[in-house]
Image (cartoon, rainbow, N blue to C red):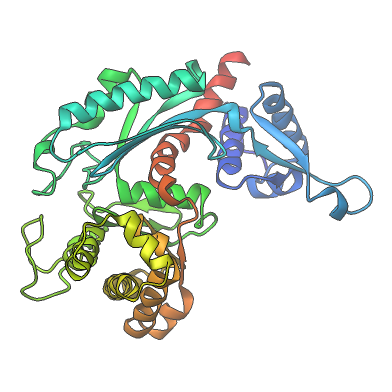
Length: 396
């Protein structure tokens, strides 16, 4: 039954747009059943959407595999109906991308920079690179919804302030969202980078359609992003998922957070590079370490596998607590694939309850190094249904 009330059409319009964003490629009949509206309502709304260039329809399956007769049309939001900017502030890089509703990147910039110690220069650079990417994309006006930011530190969702806790002391007390809004003239929302990666994988990557998943980012820092019940989970102060600062070794090395024996001091990429530099007597980079892993170097493989076991033991606790369907491994170390993933899987199987371990799959990120920037853009793209509905209402 269609929703009854003075704003029936507006409500149905918004609900259909939200459904198409979450689950694209839906048939008209499926849309009607999902929304509980009549076929006539579905047809009227889709006609309106098509005229505005908001949706696109195509026949289901390839031409060779389609059933005889008229094939059902699958409806999706048109990728170019709305765009958002994603900013990925890593510890040592800044990435900017202008993304469409389908997860496609229409313009991108990347540069190496020490984000941790120089916030003013980092914000200046973000302003310049964003302006360049937006200009290159040719996207503007009402089609550009806003800017999402993935930041390599906890973010208090209620205030937007960065909670560095000694990890990034130069940013203590700053509100990068407000500063970027002033500089860019667009709505800005800031998110922890691991949460952004989780959102990206959930919306466009390995976690699409999975309601309960974890995203583990293994880069200059180690973070955990959570999707619970189809939505990001951040905790009371934005600290949920800080798995990199869980103690895994008693009386271990002092971590940059001030504690001892954190996971980052055992399994972080920098730790692996330092271990191999000492054993090999040469300067190394993470790229060189991955080359050694691919070449079958036993020392490099051992260092990565040991890190994987440590990560797996920490993740096993989260698997017991949250019982996710999927764990996605991203970041620099994920490039090692099964050399890293197999020890993680083994540790989860050993340390988790049998039903929880049997339920969860552990896979590599399908978005790779772009997971965080796509996830950051997705923070704003999730607002697309409301923005598109307002656009339609103005032209109705």
